[in-house]
Length: 401
Image (cartoon, rainbow, N blue to C red; front, side):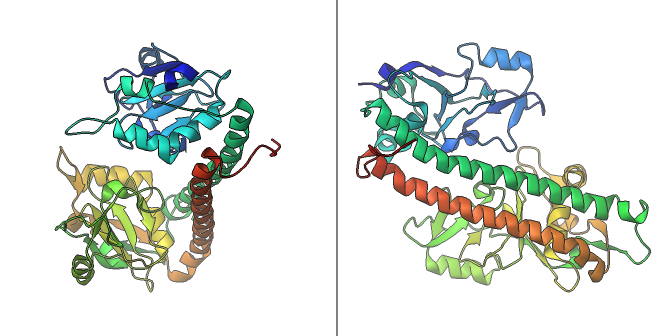
């Protein structure tokens, strides 16, 4: 049977783009479509009139699926309870017929290797590969008994529930850390709103042993090489996405290493080009991975500043605005001008005073890292279970849900 046979509707969104208004309904674009769940952190938002226009063909509702027609092509996520969203460009709404198919099962079925292969094989487009609506609707599917579907869907959904919970916890921890930093280091709340006399005005250049960007030369892609090479497009909130990057030969990696384009432990990596300062994170581990010039390296001097102090300074929204107003050039592709930005000045307390708050910020960062490690473990478990559940290698007939 075809996908359309087990669905009530398969509808594409309007092909026009919608401007981010900063508030209103979440606009689900293809980067917001994860593997199983929607990625709502940093999502664009639109007002009610745009929401109504874009959802004119079908209003997304709980248990509907959203499929990405372009990069990340083939990703599918389910709309959970309470998520009132708007369809963005190049997304498709799939409404399962619950008489024939369980929504949770259908998400993971479409993400299974067999179905992903079918979807990707049907993609076309010379410049940008994409899925067309006819091939989505006519996708050949074969689903088991509905009770088996519900058991498989429940097993995998519980894993994603935990991943989603960890993600929400991390977002909350991140906001706590930002607020704590702002209260002490920008508003000076514990000091009557004024920086103490023993604090010093410093520049970024004063507190870093090195401020630079990655390689301006991009070596050829070597897909089978173990050495990843990252650009700003591969950055996520707390690290790199290894599934989207290129790889380079060992020879090219060693050259980039000699050029100091391989981050060290406690280096702070900053999105420099395009969506500047959107992603900023500390290297918690030393790995054999190289970076390109769209990413900047800030190497804190540990004798002068705690890495977490510098991290949460650079993450402050007020700093991002200041950077946009004073330290960015280029209109088509805005980028931070590092030779100017390294002169950015701020107030810094002595190290013993830094330790009081820095220790809390470090503890928060370590908890975030532990949650991320668990997310990676859960994701690997889910991905390993997925094909085994779908092909019947794991028998779920006696599983109680």
